[in-house]
Image 1 (cartoon, rainbow, N blue to C red):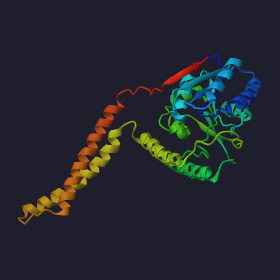
Image 2 (image 1 turned 45 degrees about the vertical axis):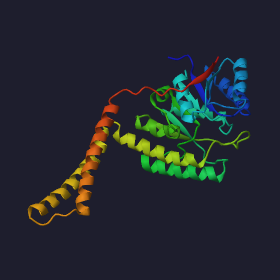
Image 3 (image 1 turned 60 degrees about the vertical axis):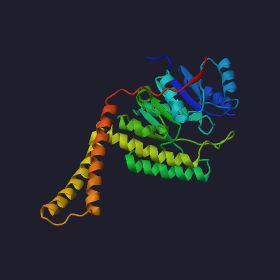
Image 4 (image 1 turned 90 degrees about the vertical axis):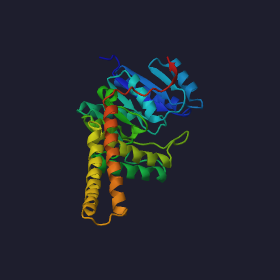
Amino acid sequence: MSEIALSVLVPVHNEAGNVQPLHEHLSRVLRALGRPYEILFIDDGSDDATLEELETLVEGDGSVRVISLRRNFGKSAALAVGFREVRGERVITMDGDLQDDPDEIPDFLQALDEGYDLVSGWKRTRHDPFTKTLPSRVFNCMTAMATGLKIHDVNCGFKAYRRDVVKSVRVYGELHRLIPVLADRLGFRVGEKEVRHHPRRHGRSKYGASRFINGILDLLTVMFLGTSRRSPLHVFGRLGGLCLAVGGGISLYMLAIWIGERALRVRPLLIGGVILIILGIQFVSLGLLAEMLASTHRDEEEYSIRRRLP
């Protein structure tokens, strides 16, 4: 068992004005818990003074560790690296923009004590612009309807995990916004806790319209993987079988016309039948290829690390 009871994982990108006050607040809260802890900052390729500020924190506090990525890989990459590196039996993730309140951490830990494996924050009252809150609400409603997981704010970065969860969930691309869904699919018990949300003081939001579109695409990815991971051929094979059945039926119908000695000209129906047969063969072939890929071990995606402190 790890000697570290609690790890606080904070991915940051261009948050030079925020990391020092965040560290001060976090340290006060964590010392009051009376448990061995660490604070792990993942610098996601910042091009401002964030890394220099983090170096100062490491020099003054032995509980702080920093991993700096060579470029901006994105939040999912930062979390994936952090999940691999954390040492604590329990893990808190939070954003580095001072909008999450460290005073919520004891309540998160209490929720884990109640039997949850993952507890996701719910920012019922948000201090963000309308252009950010509205797409978030739409995305959360779509996620709840599509997955059946009744979480009000699935994309909230403020979460608490048991160690087994962070070591089991694979986060890549931009799937960080769907971690509760991924954990639920693996059989972990997922809960929710309302949290306070503060206005941003320094820096600027990294949210853009493209992230909403990416979120919808990621949701489709998770839904597809959830139904096809065990046997991709079952998904593609059904599509292929349907195309082959319809295309074959059309072809048999046209063959019956030809046997009846009626003039058989090139018709749109005949062309459609042939196209469906070709599509059916392609779907089945794609399913077989997917089965081959699913049966092989895929190494974890690596992200280039620039520095480790200490």
